Length: 146
Image 1 (cartoon, rainbow, N blue to C red):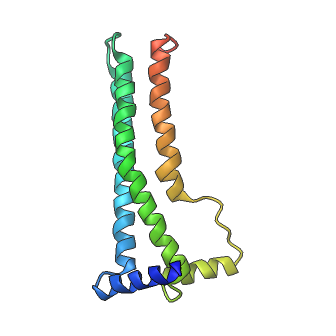
Image 2: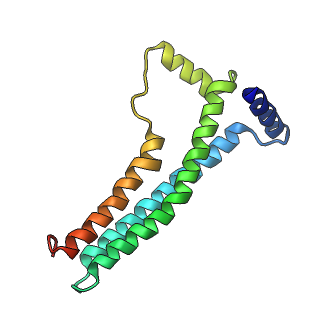
């Protein structure tokens, strides 16, 4: 029942002239762009935190960086969810789509995906970056990093 509703919605999208392929391409470009932006913001805060010469308030650079990165992560995570849903639809419901056909060929050749890059880009790497900024701030506060 659930898949019938999804199929009707997909048909409705494609009747409007916008295909799932175009949506996948748009969403993937948006997702990668947001991830790149996230990394730039992370590197700016790391550089600002370690390149400054003042001692007081230095940890605030890292703490504020963690907060800003958390805010940058929210739209990145949303783009990840949207991208994964589109890919799931293409893998499971569109048997004539090139993505589905390529996935089937890879499975027949014995390829098993052990690493989902989009999950790393949308979840694990952002968490590590935010935690690193918090750790740097904490280490500065307790004088492990001077």
